Length: 166
Image (tube, rainbow, N blue to C red; front, side, top):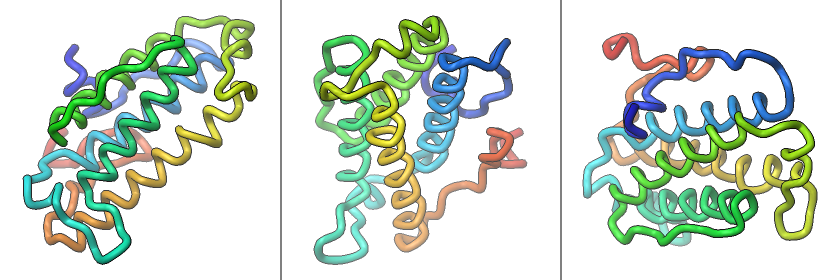
């Protein structure tokens, strides 16, 4: 399954409820929300900013890329190179999330608890870069509406695509 298709919907459940399956599902939700917030963006949309002092959608996608890469650094000890083009950054974010999601799902609770970020416990991955990325995905959705190209209305509660896509 390609990374592009992977987060179009999330219709599977983890086999059990434990630390690794919860973080994997959180990353599924992040990937799903990012997929639909950025699906169908035009070059004009990427350039949109609602005003002085606000990041553009392109800058927000780049920032989300940096946050996801930060999770990769904490998890694998190495990061990736950021693509320059916004659409490639989008695809790369989805790929990194796919890789992270599968990695976290394969860990034991002990292996998960051994992960640190900036010398802080694992929990800071959640309240730091992962939560920040969710915030910025919401900004992308708001900015798209302001730009006149709202995101398709996916169903985040069930992680299903818009009704017309189902």
